[in-house]
Length: 135
Image 1 (cartoon, rainbow, N blue to C red):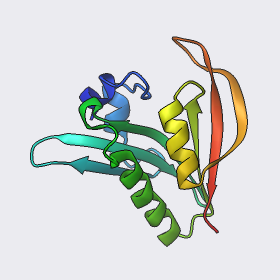
Image 2: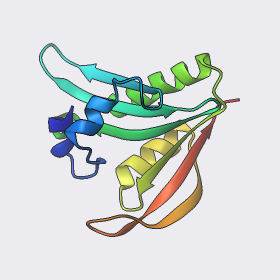
Image 3: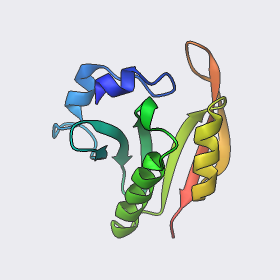
């Protein structure tokens, strides 16, 4: 997963250790959904699970497979899992310049509810905060 994420300029870049920690008991519970073909990982979504709210921490789709509905499918599967778990909402942060992601999230039903000034580095950029209310 890290190799795919490193090739995606817009993705959150995590260390190998952070990916390892996803599967340990000492960290917050997370859901990791992976889209694959017969050979490779096409994309993935990682969400941190709190009692009433899940936070999408990373969504990555292989550059050669974008515009095929992979991210939409992953987020819709995440939404279904959150609804099944009785979660009230899903939140996320996205770079202000990531227009494709903004269009996707808005088309799924996320609404902007805030902004974090200069949240991202290299380059410095604001993060837009989005929420999808489930119940």
